[in-house]
Image (cartoon, rainbow, N blue to C red):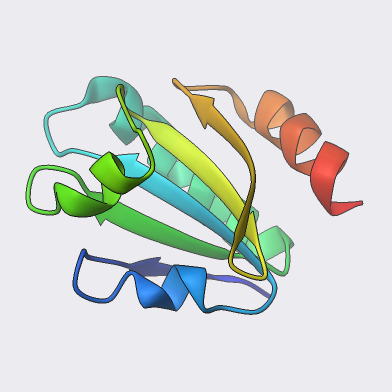
Length: 105
C-alpha cells in the first residue's frame, strides 16, 4: 500500500508537493527512540496508503529547522503538502495507529 522513502533537504519537495498522506520521520542514527519506532513506521507503510519519508537530521539540518523540530523522533503528518499534525517522541504502534486514525479516517 504505502512506502518508506529517504528524503533530504534537497528533495524535500517530495513531501510538500505530494498528493495524499505523507508522514515525515525526523530521526538520527544515534537516537534510541528513533530506532525503536522505525519498524513500527515500516509496518504502518504496509497497512496504510501513506508514504513514510525518513529525514536524517544529522545530514539534513534545513528541513527540521524549517518545521521547528526541536527533539527527535519528530513525526509530522502531511496531507496534500499541508501539515496536519505533529508528534515528538516514541510511541507504541497502538498509540500511533490511534493518532493516525484521528486524521486519516
